[in-house]
Length: 210
Image (cartoon, rainbow, N blue to C red; front, side, top):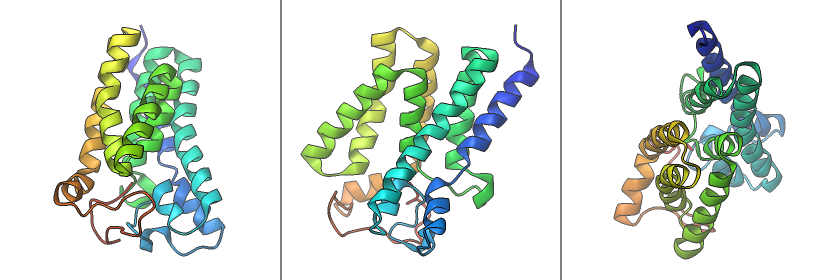
């Protein structure tokens, strides 16, 4: 039986890695304006793309995904799969509420994908396929992420028969939906910006982080 302090260490490891704001760090290193004053004001790859720096956006997506995966891999290597799950939760919460940015982080899509890579890679492929299909049909990135995350826990339960991971990603999906509440409201009233469109929510809106 794993002692409680190990769970706490795993959670803190995940949280600290998840708190790294790659979008903000990379854009500042590249000399662009403060990412929080651009477009939606979020720190994720979608908003980095609005700076016109496609390479930085790709690097942000990769960094936000890998920080979650690395947290899981490290915790699993040191203490087994249960600690990996705890680290995954910590990493996701770290991205949403980073201590370095006064607990105002992103919406978690890239980190969610990274955690799937580490814990349930077939479900990562499923998530990406659903995202691509919905995005191609609707041209709404947020809708694609919402529907893909809603279906992923059921896929893990059905395909991998893994109750622990299914429960974890159910919780993460609920958090992801909460963080997208602004997008959901805009989807409902037809004001959500489409992929390739110029429309973006105001930077000072408190629910538009991604």
